[in-house]
Length: 192
Image (cartoon, rainbow, N blue to C red; front, side, top):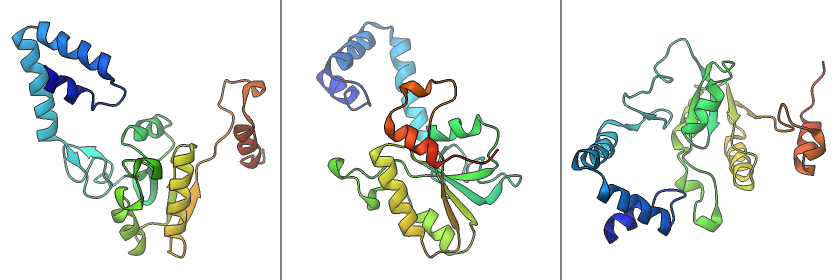
């Protein structure tokens, strides 16, 4: 039981109490349910891998985005995590491909440039395979630091480097926007 609790605590957002509740739930569940959970985890690890081109989680290599000839392979959108791709795809407005870093720079957590999966992106740009790199990291301190570091790393190479706009979210009230958000909204304004 202690070993299972320790393993469950490694999941993001799961503390000691939640891990204990999960462990006791698994203990009380039927043998079939417990084995189905174990098999789902084993199957996930056995069948999924990272795309050799973009680092997205996939069951085929290269992934569906990288192997799709209808997508613009010269336009690369850099995201922090594979889950960020879904948000961009929901817009139905992006037809390029992706590059997943699997994190952001965070010196407090020991995450430096060497821990990010950026080498294949830099190599693609150096080979002249990319016209534009869109930095779509979150507008957090870590996301901004990562975007700044990547922009510097890509400077002098052939690709144009752009950053997603940030500002006041649609459907919200300007009255509740903080000063950083409002400043970004003003900086990112465009002519109508």
